[in-house]
Image (tube, rainbow, N blue to C red):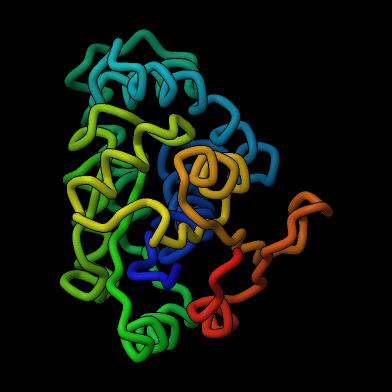
Length: 228
């Protein structure tokens, strides 16, 4: 069965989220009297995960998960309004650092040249992720964008993939999922009946993964495969 579409992850696949977080924190932390050390950057990532998980589970709002992250990170009991103002200052630095990876434009041309359509499936919020695509020059170039808020399901739930494919109008068996997170973008996609390729930019992925890319520029040969 031939492919009809490529379902792309966003953060870590199309846009360099990790570098933007790093740059944003290093610019923001000194403005609040904190040292922008490697440990401080790593701690931000660690602290955010349970709050993002709570948001994905629907138990708190997107704004509330930001406030809880700040409370934990800064050790503050500040009111919501103050926390929103503090986070907005970090957000301005983070957004200023958004960049698409330099292999994305080539990959999109290759996919289109193969006669395939593209879409995006992301666990991020709808407003922020669409803004990210626009700011990085990818708006309108990647097809429909499906988010947790749109679908009511988040990766690694296979339902996120089946719902996205249903709304996209492309059968799962004719879709190739491509993403940087092996559990979320590869294992979960295959459980939903999609084909999948792991974008392992840093070469740190599971050694047993049979379909691995280190750059999106290597995507071309996979687009004609029928057995991946």
